[in-house]
Length: 284
Ligand code: PAF
Image (cartoon, rainbow, N blue to C red; front, side):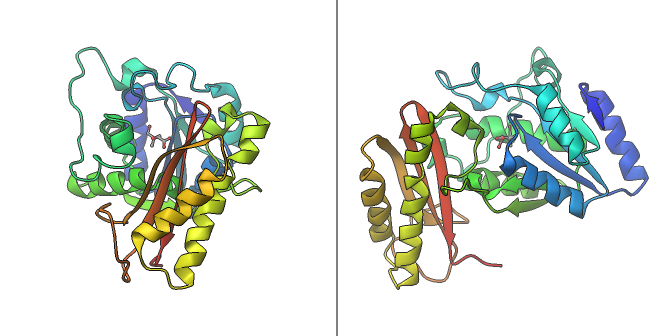
């Protein structure tokens, strides 16, 4: 496994792999790897000849007062794990490599980025879309793997891939959960053991909505209410948003028909903000 810091070196390897007709699978991460990331890596390893993982804590997707400075960073530990999973290249650039002096070009995906996470974290998706565009342009993957926990991010990345004409197929991998049901996230590391246990209320609430849906409830507001009541039964949980939206356009759905519907939540436990979701009417 080679660790690459320079964009130019990554690009030249990507060109060589294309010449050799090797399929390249790509997993973009900010490090602090957990089972969720490793599931993406395993999927990439199975599907592709070559696996590239990027580790880059992207400053442009963090807002003022967010956790950019304290985001967990341990390249040595992450690289050791990745080599055990048969990764071929780790692309771990310094900030200057991605955002050289004078950098002033950003990617803004209209329409999908103003609601949910975009409303709570202004500028977040501009940062995500910009760095993913730079990474795709550098790595030129055939397949890129993302987790469905970040459902809105997946939508934004699919849209930019289509709109900017990248020859990359986006592969979406189901959320990996802790035994309690809590979705795996690098930010879970900020939770005390007690809060980590309490945070499992999020998935319990989403499951209650899913059961209600299975039992015939088709009203979006009523499903949101079910989620809200359950989460509010945990006094330390503070709801940021609960959304029941069309999974393509991310617009609110009142009456659910046979389209895919995303039930997405963001909830704070102390200072730790967690997101999770389920999809109703999932297409195969
Ligand atoms: O999901 C993440 O970890 C990040 O948003 C990503 C896709 C690596 C871009 O920085």
